[in-house]
Length: 112
Length: 113
Image (tube, rainbow over all chains, first blue to last red; front, side):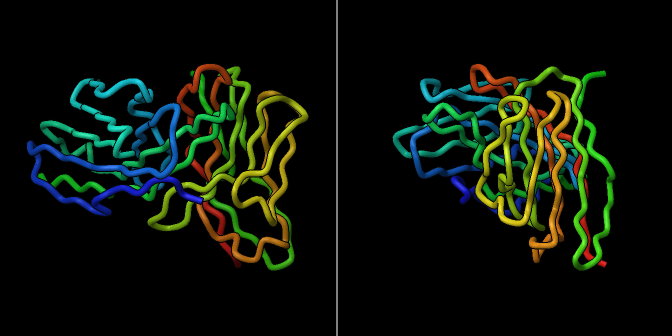
């Protein structure tokens, strides 16, 4: 079963604009991770945020986590054509088995 | 360079045939995972292993089998019992401690002839 849902399913923006993607999940978590997938390739880890953290930054990426609403957002600032990809959130539950449960993904297209 | 290697990149299966997808890692990770990805969808867990000679079923294990005879290797067999095997298969690995991120291979695309 899939834990999370990303919103929107697809997003197209002009290069240089900011892109925001949202993720909602259903059960309590240990941490939430964001991954990027270029077409036909494997996933690349972007950022991990633990349940006791509210915000995390990495370069042009900003992730927020609201455990009371069971939601997270990924902001990519000053987008570039190379950011075109699918973005997935994935959660690790509190049961210590390290399994990731993935959402359905957001397809981001950056228009040059 | 450390990483995960999946082979082959493309694979075709005839009806009634078992096929095996290879996954090798040189990251010295204890845990390895197999996922299935259908078009426009997220990843679903097939099997995972946290130690050599031990593995657990994921959410969609029916029609698949795995082995973990070496730490570096976690092959996946798609059996003839899997009636809808056409998908993109991804292998991943991670250290066991502290909820570390998973590292992914570049996938194998399986199609039916």
